[in-house]
Amino acid sequence: MSAGEEIMTPPFSVCDPIFEYFPNCLEFLVGDPKISMPSAKCCEHMMLLNTLANYGVGPKAICWCIEIMVKGMQPPLVPSRIQDLPRMCYITLSFPISDSMDCSK
Image 1 (cartoon, rainbow, N blue to C red):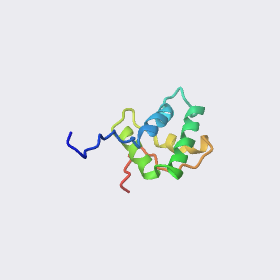
Image 2: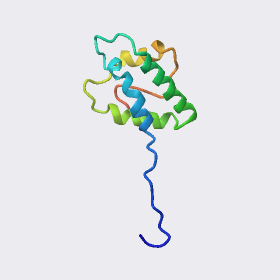
Image 3: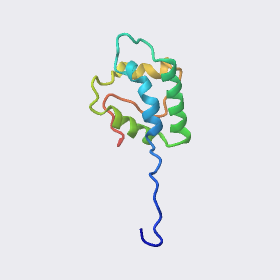
């Protein structure tokens, strides 16, 4: 290392909280027939992601992280379950979720 160089620490990953919180809803969102309602933990984590969308990383970053997670996932997310999630968790999502995520739009 030459004089004046700083040791760089890895940056905090914007996706870390999304990768931690969103998977709690996947069983419901992929249409597991044994799961008719999102879990309390799923709803709690959707509220935390909403807070991050509104006061933290922003909705586009959350969309991008979810897009990374669900692209090509098998089984895919079920559109009707995606629509039901906010109603069943009593929240209005501040970020998009879809079966074919495209956060560039």
